[in-house]
Image 1 (cartoon, rainbow, N blue to C red):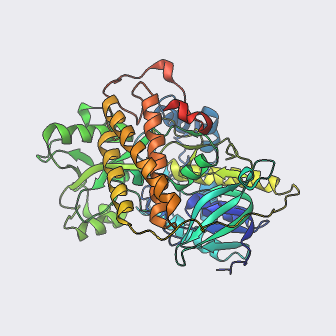
Image 2 (image 1 turned 90 degrees about the vertical axis):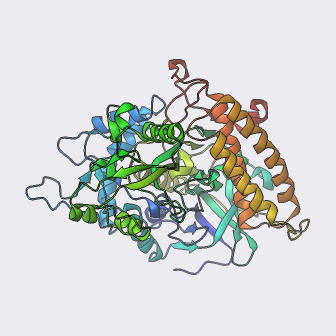
Length: 541
């Protein structure tokens, strides 16, 4: 790891160290000084925990047209077709680039197989097109890219550094308006540093810790989305929160995901008595898109008053299960479940933020010199529902798009101007940290209860009332006390929760991941993105 320069000045500041941030850093490193911020350790990201794989067309029976059609169908009319075609067209070369970085994808060992890479199938896909590294794809991608980044002289990494806010020219009494970097909290020392940058990139992931139950790590608190919103950027489609249908149900399992690939290889969802139920909801059964499967499970749990349903793949040969799903097999065994002999107890959990910071095809936001990639961005790829294994592909493609745009931007004569240091002269140490923990718990619980898989007008109104109260309380707290990482995350979570609620209240239909009992049908007149703009947000409330 290269030592950081004392003045914290860079060509590019990347906030986030998942697949999007690391792959962008590697593409920029040959011609730019790059800093990567990570809230905790460099590896701790949603990427690391991604099990399934990356979708790309390799099979001769498959086609780009089919991948595009599947993605559009999953997105229920809200996808940007041009963006979908762009991303799908880059699938194969993205995988080849990862292979060059040393990612050990699972090989096809079947005699006479036409593809050297093993391909699996997941919900929403009409063909086998998911490239994977056993059932720990994200981990292998993360560690391979991290190794390359740490070895590059032009990449400086900062672990345990939380971005506080984007520094903008107008707040520094400068013009023209653009991003100038970020204020950053070093959580090991408690000091806030100024990171100046010619370009700033938000690659900080999604906002699913806004919910009580989630498959995401603790870092997924919507920081980048909230910071971009405060900096004046539009956000879009925040009502479309994807709930993964199958997380391990166990009090100590803490967010462990059971990959959709199990269903892709024949796993069946069953009730406690062993009877299947997915055929009652969709002809595709277990391979229906995630929104349909999650609602089906939620319906069965509420209708029958049960704690969970079960995912059964025990009818497959033991060796097949262990070879294809070694991580899941080992983890379930830790909790007393032998998946080669018995079904796995599962429940839905908040998994992916399909909306985010509105960007164009080059990953540009509304603010000059500020980019957004990965789950924090709303590119138009996912629409009303993300299809399985399209997310890591999106990270890779838009990292490349951003790299090309940033390279051109850096050719301009850009100077790093003087920026005011963070002012803590008017604040004191907190005397009631319990306020943060209590507000965190309240927020995540009412978001789960009122803005979850199934919504109603009344539930959304209740959530809005509560988030408004929390917002004012947290704003007062933030203005009076020194910043901690917990306070930063709570502040950001309240902001993204408010955005989710407002977007949900604005959509008077059910579409994709947004399902409301008051408007249970899809309205053809509402085939459009839900876009929120900071300057007119108060009028929308």
